[in-house]
Image 1 (tube, rainbow, N blue to C red):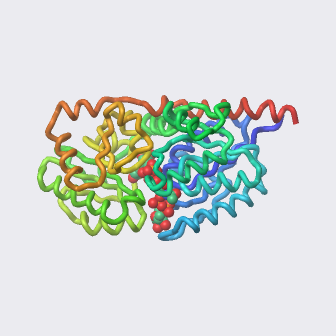
Image 2 (tube, rainbow, N blue to C red):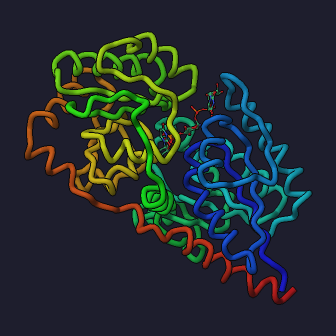
Length: 376
Ligand code: UD1
Ligand code: UDP
């Protein structure tokens, strides 16, 4: 019988981390699947770090990233270029991930070509179209044009049902980020000595990059960090700074050269996972980090007012603190001072997956397409 031709499209660091285990699964079962990988390279350096770690060599590289790119350009380029990729490789199914502009535009492009699309990490919602911007609308859009919906949790399944997605094509699979994390933590050891951390101090790991935090919010976050480091001589902060110029500029201006604050380049995924394990507290506005940290037993303070990942908030290991300077200082200080509060938030839980999401997704695609291809 013919192999199932799966075109997997991604463009940014988090998509690459979360799609890599799935690509590996297709490659492992190459008697069933013909895996074709297309990267938009919406991110360049941060994407390449992940491709190298998972040893993925894309069949198509659209290489679209430009300094300070905008949403119109990413959308238009991906929409047009994926059309050509689909015409050339004739996939049976296209897979996209989550809520980036690459994913939304690739899903639309495949829909226009009448190729069925599978959405990995489907059904996440805040139900507020501007938070996060533009991700909430990107994922609603992707869900609307996709045929197969691979939802990570019960909440995301419910959100899809509320969005009138046919239940016959909603599959609860877990999140592939846990597959990536478990694989990486098990198979890699990382040397963090280059950061120059003092082992006698508690480490606070910070990441922030969201568009809605550009400007005043990111400046507030930086000022909160300055105050915390000033007040607590036993802490140090590590911030792998996202390459977006809207992040680089204020962060280096406010935190650059300050004692016990380490501003470093975006880290490769393996050392970053090791750093998450070593950190005392994590402050972040990242989606992926919110999913990973609870399984490593790390308390997370989320620098946003809403989240599409309510599960760990409900368990109590993740707390939304927003971007008000005083609130960030207060909540972090509470975790530093109050042992009981720290213990409560550092329980290891795993609401996002068990490491088998990619296997489930591949199995579902196999079942769906094997019969169809055999009939042809
Ligand atoms: C994108 C996604 C966001 C996701 C984030 C993950 C959209 C609209 N945004 O936001 O959902 O959470 O990635 O990190 O899809 N840059 C580099 N090198 C890189 C990556 C970025 O120089 O490897 C710089 C470039 O100047 C680029 C800018 O960052 O133009 C912005 O990148 P872009 O992908 O548009 O936005 P992100 O903020 O990274
Ligand atoms: N990450 C990484 N290196 C870093 C910072 C983050 O490998 O320096 C990983 C992190 O573990 C998670 C993913 O990148 O898997 C999250 O990416 P990001 O925060 O850029 O995007 P989001 O998840 O918010 O879309």
